[in-house]
Length: 385
Image (cartoon, rainbow, N blue to C red; front, side, top):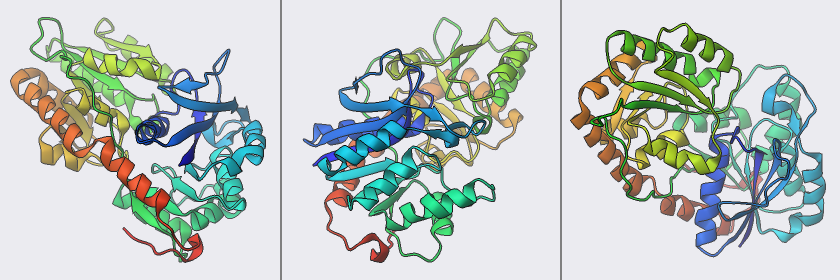
């Protein structure tokens, strides 16, 4: 099959985070099974935009800010729509990593207008909202796209419920699709038993919901209590970097807490291997790719109880699940630092779970089944869980 995946933004600092990682992983898995896959996206930050990433062909188009001060939602890619007009009939399937923005929504609407089988994957980014700007956008684009998509892929029961609320009484085909992770090589990672100070890693966007400031506050509490460790934040800034840097400077531990800035996609695997513990303090995070990657790298992980992958971590005993308080986060990290053998065992269990339960084979099987399954027009397709 010839498949086009559409994502909002491609940039050298991987600023769009999880959805782009998911698209790359899916594209690679499909490519490995003989499919012809291309990723299309808006782009920014390149002197010369790349034509491939991890062996996947890219079609990148300049990002234009048409509605300022609202982040990705105000971004458009007019040149991509022109390219789609000319080329969209070449594809058997259009898979759109859908958000309330002016890149993915117009692309999906255009695909539907040409009668191309269109699949939407929302990554927890489309939920009921009272925002004034969302109402006309939903009426014009979001609701028509969701109601007419061949399949809507969702991550969690909460996302399924949110999507049901958005589409209303319309009969749509909702299919669960978890994020998967390619298998990493069996290279050694730095355990808490290392002679050097163990490193506690936060690798994610510096965005309010991901709570990087809470990570810094917990680091300060742990270092104040006499633990020997390093705490590193890695990721692109989405409005929190200034506050994070200020907290670090005023912590009294600026030698052992640092913000490194963003990494390209190619640098994340090695960065996990340098760490001993992975921490993501996010609340209501659907199914974060960074946690899956850290587990695949053999790191014990710490997440909050509203994280979509928390049940997997609890059942698999491959990390610690905490409430949203700084004290609980600090206590969990301190336990792992104080119990290196238990931390190491958690990391090994996490690596095993990533292989057995979270690999790309299952993801590819769902995608191929949905892409190739003959279905009635979307407006009468049967909703299923």
